[in-house]
Image (cartoon, rainbow, N blue to C red):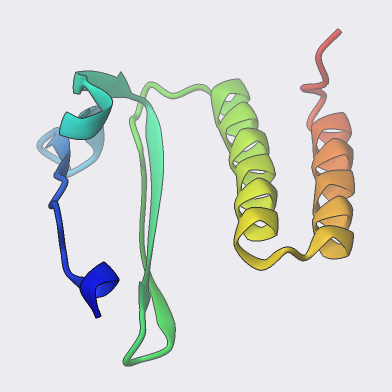
Amino acid sequence: MEEDKIAKTSKIEINVGTNSNNVPVRMKWSAEDGNINNQEAGAMFLSLWDPREKNTMKIDLWTKDLSIEEMKQFFHQTLLTMADTFEKSTGETLITEDLRDYCYHFAEKMKIMPE
């Protein structure tokens, strides 16, 4: 099928600098198509679906200087993004409403609700 042929390849690169104990101290990422070049990052989740194994491969990293407050916000925003992505990819609106309700609950419990 014509639409299944690869028309373009994009590159996303993540560079992680670690200290002598192998703890991340700096992360930078680049994405050619997004005009992002060596952008600083404090934390990341990368999940890849393995269709053969029917399993998720993942990497989660954060720098040693990332504060607990920043991690709470990162988790909250990531959970909201996951709800958005799940709704967009599956059309499942009822469960994504539940996920967003949980995100609100999470933000309340973590005391990160905007004023």
